[in-house]
Image (cartoon, rainbow, N blue to C red; front, side, top):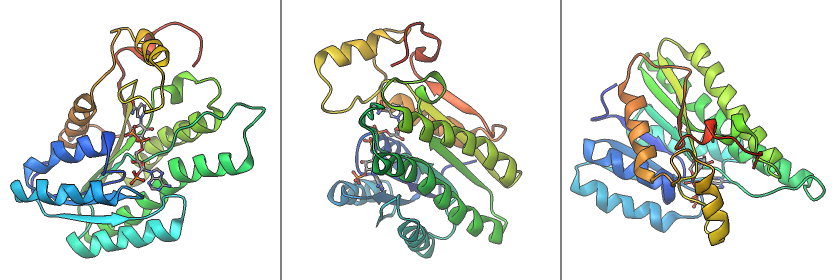
Length: 249
Ligand SMILES: NC(=O)c1ccc[n+]([C@@H]2O[C@H](COP(=O)([O-])OP(=O)(O)OC[C@H]3O[C@@H](n4cnc5c(N)ncnc54)[C@H](OP(=O)(O)O)[C@@H]3O)[C@@H](O)[C@H]2O)c1
């Protein structure tokens, strides 16, 4: 699919990988619905960046854990720019949940934000495309650990493994009108509270012995949007982490 003139909705667009993908796509001349939850000021910065590229940007806000909010911001986005032709689910949460400490609230939060919200957003976006018989591309940001395992993060990896399966299943349900693929990043932007030792360990566990860049992930998104013969696939952009030996986590 050509990127130019499309309505793109990116969740978590204010910061980090969602922001990098937004900045990679704005120069094409798009209509961008930039979703945020708390980073409204950062998402709003995309409006000025978009202006330079004749890409109107509309900021939408909502908690992915609440289906009513997901439906509300999807409706706002569609009212602004028409059906979402390119949906990029980047928002997520990630924190350790050792088995002896994890609570039901942790489980629900990780599942709701990382899986349930993404599902109902895809449902809302797909309905508008199907109604207008307009093609679409959905991309979900998974994680290389969804297939590899990550000790002390069981609910998180389960949510991401679910998102990977959701990608494959929706690819089947929505074909041939909508292509659905995922990207599994390896260590790219580590959590801000990581120590130097944790950063080094993450890097050492890749085959390429370095962290990826947000641009590596944004390039993968461009590839998946433009390649019209790909659906139901996961693209690991992980420096070889998925092949590297070693204990889980
Ligand atoms: N960074 C990496 O190296 C890496 C590695 C593997 C996988 N990934 C995956 O790639 C994607 C992007 O990574 P990232 O590091 O950029 O993600 P991130 O910084 O952890 O989160 C991105 C955004 O998610 C939004 N978010 C959190 N809780 C939300 C909620 N309840 N409702 C709505 N939005 C919520 C936040 O938006 P606000 O700031 O607006 O609140 C946040 O800025 C994620 O899906 C992540 O799992 C990343």
